[in-house]
Image 1 (cartoon, rainbow, N blue to C red):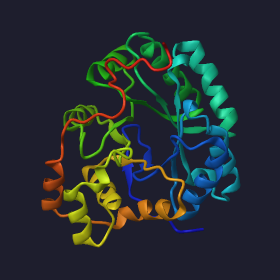
Image 2 (image 1 turned 30 degrees about the vertical axis):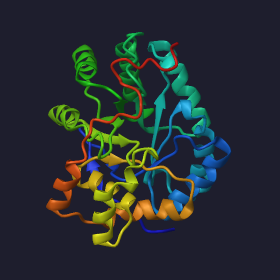
Image 3 (image 1 turned 45 degrees about the vertical axis):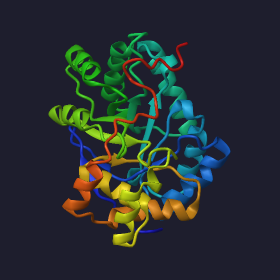
Image 4 (image 1 turned 135 degrees about the horizontal axis):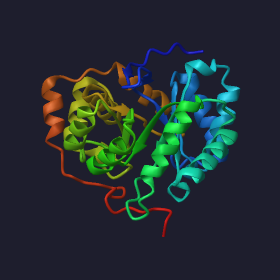
Amino acid sequence: MTHTNTPTLSLNDGTTIPQLGFGVWQIPDDEAQAATEEAIRVGYRLIDTAAIYGNEAGVGRAIAASGVNRDDLYITTKLWNGNQGYDSTLRAFDESMDKLGLDVLDLYLIHWPCPKADKFTDTWKAFVELKKSGRVRSIGVSNFHAPHLDKIIDATGEVPVLNQVELHPYLPQGELRSVNSSHQIATEAWSPLGSGHGLLENETLTSIASAHGVTPAQVVLAWHLQLGNVVIPKSVTPSRIAENFAASTVSLSDEDMTTIATLDAGTRYGGDPDTANFGLE
């Protein structure tokens, strides 16, 4: 087994999370096992899936086959929007755990706030209950803006440990990262490499990569790590899985970080959390 020395971050509930993880969005279930096994073999210990990805079972098979002690892995899944609400959340959690083949989950996230349905507060109350029961170690959210965070914290007194949001050099989310920090909520980046929209061909990034003798993807992942983000790149290609993992050894200068900051264009490729109601239409 490859020795893993990924940096970790401390969360506000006293637990820690690997800062560099493996995401499985858009990986079909029948490919998820092989990709996840390879990621674990390379050294990843954080695996991020979701009910809507349809690959929790494949991830579960990889966990079982990996030979790595369960306590050394950090598994995240997410509640899909159509299952929000107190009772339906508890049922959906059981289904996810059956597919993953796990007794305890490291981190459970509300996938989107879906303000139109306005069920995320009741959903969060179910999350608090799951944490109290010991079936989930940590609870958090995904795609939440400041008003969504305030609403669940005010209703329960329970602060999410983490907020997973779209975040890349074209959308660095400085304001939201500050909001998260003010609550001691970690920020996790989805679409960290810009989801194939040409970010990795950007001349600024390619020239920094060339100067360091690394790839543009490694530069972007190193940028995330140095900002303090948790980051979960996805790939099914073994060489790319290993390349992404090696980003934790890349060190960018202050000048590099300042230069990358100039790429902020406010460009959002995914849904806007204030208006997105996926799965409810």
